Length: 428
Image (tube, rainbow, N blue to C red; front, side):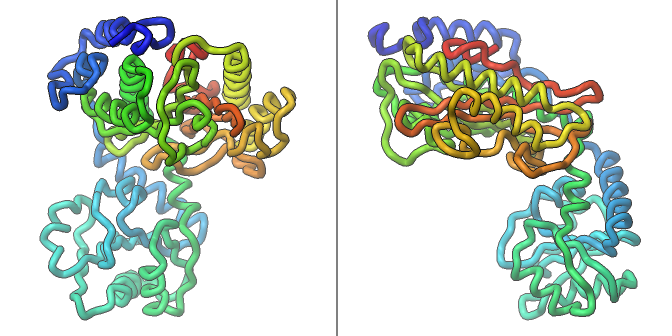
């Protein structure tokens, strides 16, 4: 392959691969291996990311449940119902697939938690359950909503308010409501978000590891750009790099004018000299998600590309500076948007400009509570974690997005990853 076809940021792909390999020289374990003959050298050089992830302890999960009970009392909930979701995992460590059959958890403000499971799944459910021993079964010809109502009645809950976790499917809620019509039902977000928005040191450590892995995967994948590459090939390389580092991860890719699509385009794309390259993705470590975007150029950037990239970096930095303890979430969005509108773009969500919110919460879900968006007056507090990702989109040209996630300390925000340095230096 010619040097031109392997160009990346003024270096050959081989030189970039050497740099990546050197940065991971201390990693332990096996490399990517010859899982496919077309795996680029920069990815074959990778080894499993050093160290190990420390899972959330049972003691921490019990502390979470106690906090949830305090929030139930403060918000007038007699109990909260959850089905398999990130919230159930957050409290119990249970992973269970969703189907038409109810696997539910009744979480009372007072008294023992209970699980409602299909009768033929009881043995498997008991293998996973570590908190509580009340497991109620329902048979295929029975209503699981009636079983939930029985759990509530056994705990003396015949009137009052029940919280329904926000991702509960309607048919399950409807069955409970019909079985216990004397109760009232509201969304349980004050409890679930009230717990999950504030991350512990253990959660932040898992988020840090996920972000570190994704940065290395991106570095290796961008080290293998070549002319004619499709968005699918680059996306596959990013997934392979994550696997080589010991994680499951992926990314959406936008090349050239398709970088303007915030969440990618289905149309075929092939990389050409001077194209913008946008990659947005992450991986999961013990359930905790990374979410990073890097935007660079294949070959030499134009003055226009550099100008817009620099403006985007300024907007991202303005959002970071605004994310102080006690500030409102909407003020962070306003800070980033101000930079872009003062440059003559927008206003609001108009394109060319910033077409979406500046950031979202992140943790066990890639997008969770709460958001950097106009109208959100939630006060920023230590332990909150967010993405910082304003974007400058122009469908007639290209798009630039820089995304790094941050966590809030007592003294202010901290990035999990170093910001990009310049359009031709995507890694700090």
